[in-house]
Image (tube, rainbow, N blue to C red; front, side, top):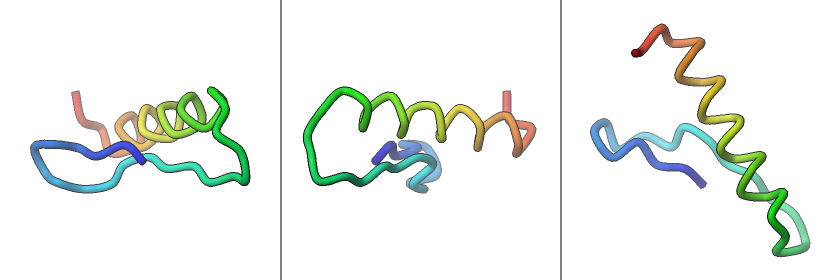
Length: 41
């Protein structure tokens, strides 16, 4: 999961039955999309 330290909100997450790099990149991509969708800069 990716946590916004300022607001303490979870802004991205990913789950799977493995521990590969895709989990991290999926969570980061979700966080980026959340931030862009909310209009934050």
